[in-house]
Length: 360
Image (cartoon, rainbow, N blue to C red; front, top):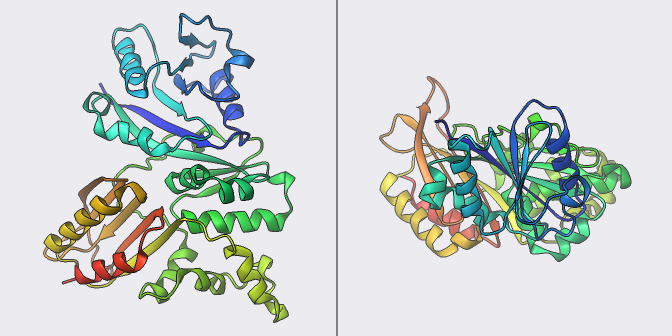
């Protein structure tokens, strides 16, 4: 039997997760989805559309979906759902897990890799984060959980954008991109994201694409040799309307506009046009993950390894790191290694220096 894809849905309170889930549970989308609710949420779906007695934690919907609250831990709930599906008691094709507004999605994601029983039955598809444009700046300033949710995301949806002026939305999008350049951002109304943009994103697939906004990579070219990452960002986007660089004196002011809040969740891209020595790189990454693993949210790379004719792809969540051989380098394709690290106060200089010493 093929693995059941699972999506983790995260985001602060009021960002529209409940609206999105209600749609999943009631709309005629033709998919059979099990929604697992972490029931510590302050705004439970149950109040609106579920009238369930306490004995039964699984409720069937008219559109073939089921909703279930986590009574024990996630592992037990997932195992129970899969067992009931095998026996033919429940019919569903995929799972969406809603984490509480304050949750760190890291441990939830790790469940899919660390627990053999879960890993044999489920495939983690992606982490989707909803961000409330109206309150995001405050939440990102005050709450590390909100910043971590952004750092973990494979896809970011921004809701309530109509409630803020365009320049505030623009500043938020810049800020989110700095924290996580891997995740595409999409503005949605009331958190009503199209299901096609939520499901089957394959965020955890080991593939040879490193999806980073091209502007972000451009800025990587000239400064991965240790220049600060904060200021050149603004030069790259100098033509951006929110920066009004044409007025001469506005440049510094726009510069402050992105970075006066220096988020602890940051990303940086490392590029090298020399091949890595496989043994040295493995030792170095192993050591880094050992020391900084809890602060490393997501990281991924497409690497040129000495003596290997194919691309090597690696990615990780916290201390869990996996790698695989990708496709062969194309004829005439420039061989370049690209890596992105997203984490909390990661020592960029140590990482860059260490990676540099792994080049052959």
